Image (cartoon, rainbow, N blue to C red; front, side):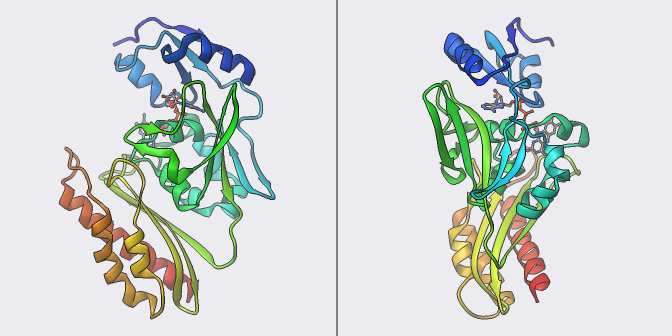
Amino acid sequence: MKPAPFEYHRPVSLAETFDLLDRYGDGGRILAGGQSLVPTLNMRLVTPRAVIDINRLPGLDAIRITPEGLIIGALARHEALEHSALVREHAPLIAAAMPHVGHEAIRTRGTVGGSLALADPAAELPACAVALDAVIGLTSRRGRRDVPAADFFQGIYTTALEPGEIVTDLTVPRATGGWRSGFEELARRHGDFALAGLAARIRIEGGVILEARLVFFGVGTRPVRTQAGETALTGGGASEDRVPGARHALQNDIDPPADIHGSSALRRHLAGVLLARVVGTLVEASA
Ligand SMILES: Cc1cc2nc3c(=O)[nH]c(=O)nc-3n(C[C@H](O)[C@H](O)[C@H](O)COP(=O)(O)OP(=O)(O)OC[C@H]3O[C@@H](n4cnc5c(N)ncnc54)[C@H](O)[C@@H]3O)c2cc1C
């Protein structure tokens, strides 16, 4: 199929982008990497009046370190994150996750802003953003607001973005000492969306996990942080001994959907497997 006719605009400034968003309202669609938008246009699942291509907005692809943390521009490609020394140093969780996003050709075009705005519950980057306590920068004609990733993702393909706003950046706070991160996912084939995945961080001292962030993807309508699992994992005793309890507690926090790729029970099981595997590796590495 071919897309329904639409007007095409390629603004070169944020002001021009906001003019276009005002002009077309609900009928305007931002185009970034196009890896998700273009197939839905071609299948006529979306039929916007205008496509607003933001690829020429200057500076939005920058990755830089500041006193607040690592700031990743919305137009930074998945591939740039995968190979960035700054990302490896300041957000190793994201560097570890990126090779799992689709295939190389997709990663050379897909962007940070597109992935966050799309809010696919099986996507890697949203889960990493929540696990890292990252903040998503949204900009509109009204100004800028910073939304914690934990509040940004609201449901399947649903976010806190309001009309006229675009994602402009992602800020990962500077890591304090003692935190280690781990990432793993299970998919039928490499490059497929995950059946279940885990973006995790733990703060461990002397073999005891003091704090944890466990954020699953592919098991709910958005990234799912398991506070029951985190509580069971932390607070005294050898870390290895706490994993079975955390694995059990996790089940209270997830209610995975069933689809043609896997049942709810399979995804529950996989989430437990991932928890044991990722935390086990992190604990071992810290010894
Ligand atoms: C075969 C295949 C496999 C894939 N596998 C994976 C995978 O395993 N994991 C994964 O995470 N992704 C996967 N993807 C999706 C891919 O990563 C997309 O690139 C990404 O999700 C969207 O980014 P994009 O820049 O291409 O956005 P686009 O397709 O350009 O846009 C996606 C949506 O976000 C909106 N948007 C884009 N940028 C902004 C912005 N800055 N502000 C506001 N709204 C914006 C658009 O209007 C559109 O609604 C796959 C895609 C394909 C085709």
